Amino acid sequence: MCKAVTEPATKKVFLIGYSRGAVLAHLAATRIMNGSCGYGMGAKVTWLGLVDPVEVGSPDGYAAMEDCDATVARYSVYDNARTQGCLGLVRSSSTGQPVPVSVLMKTTEANAAADPFLLSTTPVNGASYRVFDFKGTAISVHLDMGRSGIVRKALEAEGAARGGLRYR
Image (cartoon, rainbow, N blue to C red; front, side):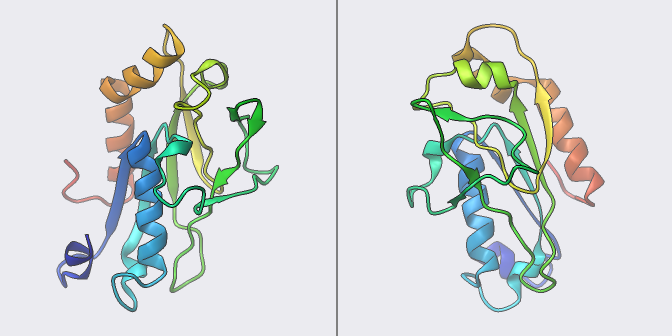
């Protein structure tokens, strides 16, 4: 990833992920911001598109987690009847401003009913949310989001609105 980020022709970096991949995209953004790819490369991270991020995806345990802020934690997320927390706010390493994050997630009801270990969707502090209401069991809701043309189109629109030139 650092090879792509440090390429001089790369001006903007969008990180997109689904499910555990969404948590990993968030973790990658955090690491790039902290200088893992070299000085100043964090300024290239300009948008994160996260589809139904699940709390079990981080290889560092809950290193990317923090307590939810009442102003941004719009959804209750349960794992064994307790709220796990939120993915941390991503800030630009050069300006200190929040990096835009778009989270496309299932409804609160489907989230609370989901398998409590595997499918606890994690809110992202400072993110804009778009909620999709899929019918079916809680597990198929999560899988249906990954297959959904509706979610893909919404994600593509968000990326294009952020100036993504080669989004495909």
